[in-house]
Structure formats: C-alpha cells, structure tokens
Length: 159
Ligand SMILES: [Zn+2]
Ligand SMILES: [Zn+2]
Image (tube, rainbow, N blue to C red; front, side, top):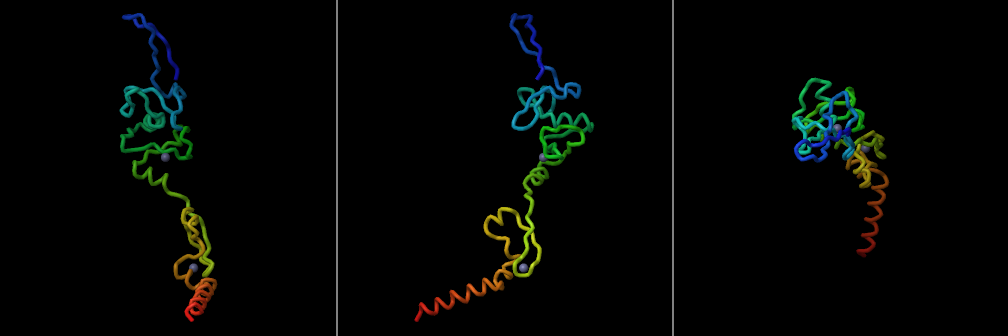
C-alpha cells in the first residue's frame, strides 16, 4: 500500500496518508487470506480499518453495479488474486457456497452390469464404486459365491 508521511500541524507528529484505491492504483494494497485487500474507507463494504476486497471494488467500477453484502464476487478462473474485469462475476452468497462445495464426481463402471455411474470421491473412499446399485451388488457372482460359502460354513457349525 503506497503511503505518504506528513506532519500533523496540530501536534507535530508524523502521520501516514494512505492513498485511496482506484483503477489507477490497481495494485496498491496487500494480500490477506489469499485475497487482495485495498484501502477505500468510504466504500460500503469497507471494514473499520477502511479496507475492502479489491475484487468487489474492481467489479463495481468495471460493471457500474453495486455488490451488496448478500452477494459475492466470484473469480471465474479460480485465482482469487486475479481481479481483472473478465474474471469477476457477481453471484448470491448461497449460490457461491454451492459453487465451491460441489465436488467433482468420479466415473465408475459397475462390475455387474457394466453401466457407467458417478460417485463423489468420499463415497469411493468408503469402498463404494464397484456396483451401480445395491441390487447389482447382491447379484454379482462373487457376492453370491461368498454368501453360499458362509451359508455352508454356518450349516457345518450347526451340526
Ligand atoms: Zn468464488
Ligand atoms: Zn449395475
């Protein structure tokens, strides 16, 4: 953040004057939590220190629109530091959370019926992903064989 130092006329102390953000001093700011923060004390979304996210300010200037707090500025390419015009998109808070929580699904092929199906990674980690449905799991030859064996064993145990 570019700042100038001047002397306070009343008490003679030095004080820092930070330039307010605009498109002309686009890179005047710093990175906090992976986002670019700039100084703009009069902005409607500035915090008590007068700083705000550059993505919001840049979006508003570029698109002549207001991003109220129920909206987020989403970075289309996934790079939160790329606040260029084409990379900014205004979406509602709920939609934004959904967008970021959606995990890509993995393509699986059922070993019983060879049908393609999709599962999220966490289901695969649980050992799913072999059968497209519980029914296909029950009728697969391996399952049938296993069931037959345990049945036999149980019968033997009973005698
Ligand atoms: Zn986003
Ligand atoms: Zn199947």
